[in-house]
Amino acid sequence: MTGEQFRKRGVAQAVAGAALVAWVVVVAAVAETGSPRVLAAAAVSGGLVCLCALAGGAVATRVADGGSATRLRHVFVVLEGTALALFFPFYWFASGVEPVGEPGAFALGVVLVLAVPVVAALALALSSSLAAHRLVVDESGPLVPDSLAAGLAPRIRVLGTLLVVAGGVLSAGVVALAVLSPSQWVLLEVFGLVVTLTPVVLGLSLTRVRDVYSARRRNVGAYIVVPAAAGYAAARLASIGGAAGMLFGALVFGAIVLLVGANLVVREFTGERDRPWRPASRGERR
Image 1 (cartoon, rainbow, N blue to C red):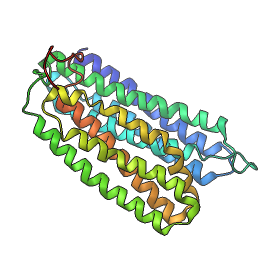
Image 2 (image 1 turned 45 degrees about the horizontal axis):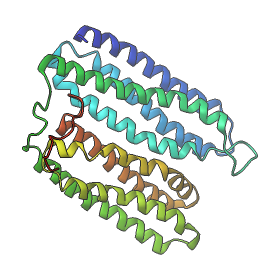
Image 3 (image 1 turned 60 degrees about the vertical axis):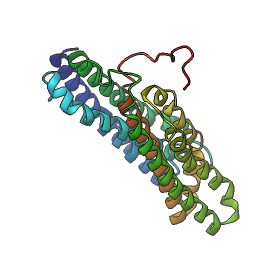
Image 4 (image 1 turned 90 degrees about the vertical axis):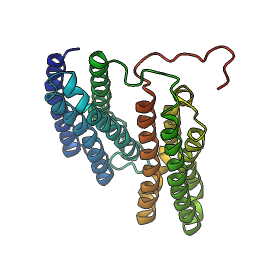
């Protein structure tokens, strides 16, 4: 892909992002549900995901060649991570939208119509980041030429330490809420504790990284499956728990930000997109 092609792609993405934002606004304005505040929260979080796609398209229009793509590549990475992190609260809030006159039910039709532009925007944000990376690699070569280089390992281990400390703080906050909250919330808070402990587990894994190759083997992206599976608990407690529920949701969202950030940082440090994954040499211990 050339710089000119990338700019044209950016224009199309910016137009599509604006249309997706308008779609979300219209759905939130005209849809009738039994939980208008939850619908509004879902629309806000989903609209922010769409804005990430719009911003990515606007930035892409400023790319003229490989040099400008290199300078702006990290902007696409940040927008990608922001869109991915914001998708989780959208998913939580959307799962709590109720039909009119049917408390406890799920407004499937409204949620599907609202989810289409949000999922499309997320796909645009992810694909534009990948396209920017490929443009840079085509111009300058792989960002991490040596897959077995040891120079980046200390940075990955520092990241692992930060994840352990920050995840431990978030987990302590969830435990404190569990002590002070009503007993019927305990099961939901257990799910929250599992989510906030996930960055700790990932951090412990990253502290044992010895080189770029061993960092690739950690499969950091798989850790995001845990908060996705426990999202209902966060949505449910945040909706019934008042201030305590909102604090609980903030702690869980903090863990998601840590996991998404760690995924992007490890990917950048290891150059995972530069070349296909390859097995270790025969007889070499990892």
